[in-house]
Image 1 (cartoon, rainbow, N blue to C red):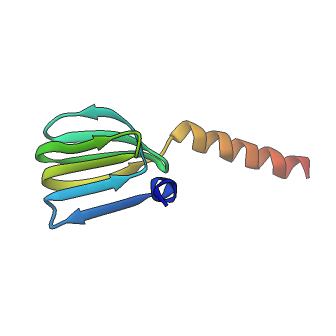
Image 2: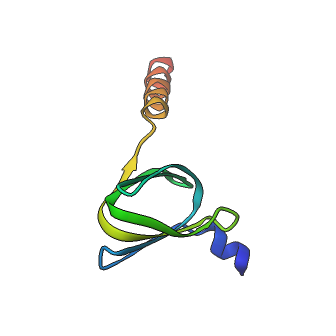
Length: 95
């Protein structure tokens, strides 16, 4: 059951004051106003004020943040998107 919980991706925000995420692979950047994470589903940027990490367990993929939360944004890897688009166009020409 524990392994099954580890594989799920979940984001939970409580009253814009507490944020819990599962599926976190690494913390790329952190300060009181911005946190950048790599998750199973891509990069996530969290913006706010006076943010503090209360739980970080990369073995379980879990991160909890408290503070004044203003934004949660998923950031796409533009290079991967361009490669996929180029491959798609090439496939159309080959057909």
